[in-house]
Length: 394
Image (cartoon, rainbow, N blue to C red; front, side, top):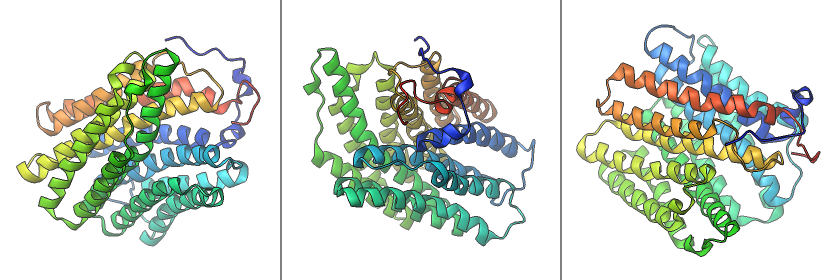
């Protein structure tokens, strides 16, 4: 892959440009967080450093990946997409600075707030997702796009999981949040992945009708994941295991209908299909945890690294190009970044099963993660910080 040519020079990059559209500042911020939190967690868990964390180390790590990293990705994508869907003015300028400031304050308080009152840390961190939902809901309501409300329902479920997590420090809520995150993948990934695949096939004169989208199957998959989230938090192991198998099977059927192998030559597409394939893998591993006593960190890392983080990398690589008016041609090194994320998930899952020794496994998956998101930062930071080459807003 060749680097993308552009008429915009590095001199035109500016900090203010990052606040011209939500995807710019939030994609950059979540990438920087990804590059900080994972190595800091590795150094913390191996005893090399000791941070003044506002939460116990494991809970801090889980919260920042679920409600710091993921929430920034959601804000960047949703607040950009909903403007397009509803044809409304984007959130930018001072409003976007204030929203981003709430997100940033949450990160700083959790990392450095060991002596800060718990209620303050909790309130600041719990404020961000509702603000994102209110922004999106206002636009969706005024545009009368009822179809989009299901995204807000799942986001509300994710927020409920965050409330339970920060107030009770119960890992059941972090696990519930992972399922809610995969439910979001079910909605958003279920829209863009088959649609992009059909478009790619059509452009090349291939059979786009081979890609099947079945609304009833989509809804059944989503409902099964919502029920799974509720069951997981209540602790009903048998019901949870059965629901995990049902949701995993439904997701596999959807993937088979999308015919991802037909687009195997396009990295911006195969990364979406392959990342979503981790969803049923994670759900079957969850069933194995409940029924067979498999390690719980196997399914959680299959979900968190394999599904959520890999899909985020694929989506932001595409969205950034599209919304900055550039051709959908990956910059040099991004294919390797996609592969590295898949390997990071595989290594982490194998480490959970002791197939790979703990220290090499943790270290290896960390380095692969850092390479993937480090490559995105190197190749995309100028794109995010410079105006569109065509001069349009974006």
